[in-house]
Length: 233
Image (cartoon, rainbow, N blue to C red):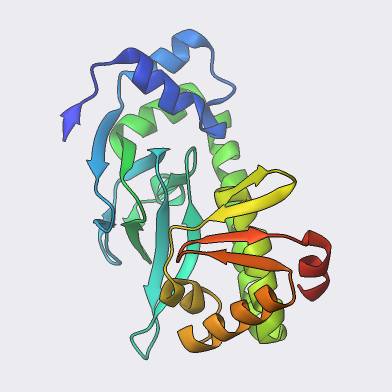
């Protein structure tokens, strides 16, 4: 790990994070001076369940999947995180270990701040702790929605909900249609909503035949009829 000597890069990273949004420029510079950056290649593990959580991780560029393994040793994706999201925030309030694994879905640059350094930031700026709790609340709500989707919705509704939820992280509007460039393969997408890859492929093909989506290569999906997709969610 190397110290980030580029102030502009560090400031860019810190500015993306809502918990630092109330800081003045002088205070933000103090944060930036503590930032350390590290690059991860696509597919590289960032940390594993059980590893000590003693840093705040800020995603500068790229996307990360947070996942656990079921009793059947199947991967269950819990969150998908992208630029500006943070990991390890709750454990900075009380030291602990990760309850999940993290893997880079594409090349990623992470900014990190150690717990010791972050404790100093909190002492000077206690309002940051409230912002951290807001972030944790949003994540819990997202997890509750996933649990509700897995437990109450039929398969087609799960798929429709997943595609709609992907818009925030992977969507790009083009010529009146929403294009999803998804860095997950079909197996990962299926695991995300608790179905088999074969079932997912069959249902996606069915949506394509109905003119609701268009499958382009392996990881690009074009939503052609948003209303009909939402009706199925």
